[in-house]
Amino acid sequence: MGPLQTLVLILVLWAVAVSACRVLHLEEHGLEAHPLYIIYRSHRLNDLLSRLASWNPSLWRVFGDVAVAMAFGQMAFLGWLLVRNLLHLFLNPSSASPMLPLIPGVTIKPQSIPYFLTAASVIILLHELSHGVLCAVEGVRVRNSALLLAVFFFGGAIQPDEGEMERKEGLGRMRIYAVGSLTNLALGLITFALSLLLGGRLPRPLSLLLQWTYFLSINLAIVNMLPTYPFDGDGMLNALFKRFRDHGEALRRITGGSFLLLVLSNMAMSLLKFGLISF
Image: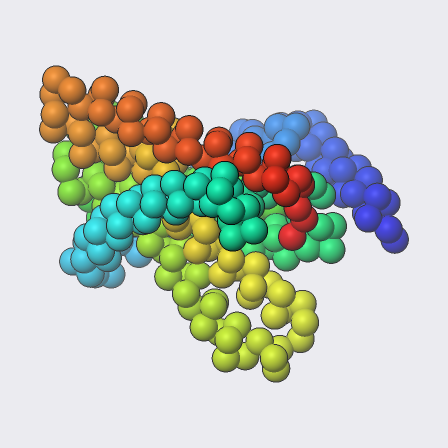
């Protein structure tokens, strides 16, 4: 079966699944079907988060403290990387790194899509679970936890109580925002080490999966600290600049806008210099 036939089969099966969920009224059991995703919301997942948080709250807070320190380091590194790469794109394109969005079938080769989607699904799920655990540790109620099944991948979503998050001050709030990136960074380093140690002895599909996992994990850990919505870096800056009552919001907007301009400039110059590149 070729790539086109496989894609058509997936879409047909997806349409059948969405239709079945609606016909059977499964939303009464927490299963919501939408054209692009099916989501299962349940408070039972909250119990899992609470159990994980209760194992050793002090250790989780230390992990959160490390995440906060790393987050600001990642933010500074990302700013330096964006400025440096943009200068290279203008002055010496051969030494620049193309910066393009990862789009299956466009910038990701068809044969790489299964590895990309599997790795991305695991990474997103662990990222959201770590947010949920830190919410439980910090006493922020999680309204609901969800497992997400989209057309081509799965993941998770944690929805904390917005009012309690707004009232949470300082370091505790920063821990919740920062922990996802540190989880991704840890996963990336672990899978990178496994790839170096075992890559040559593993079956090719598993070796490729490890490579995609560390590539996506490390990149997501850094990119997620972009201080602009909807990334966690924006939440970090919001918690930091909230202390500056008069100018905090203006500082947040200026910082986020500057980073966003750098990202868009890198992408535009990458397209002009390299065109679309598939990985």
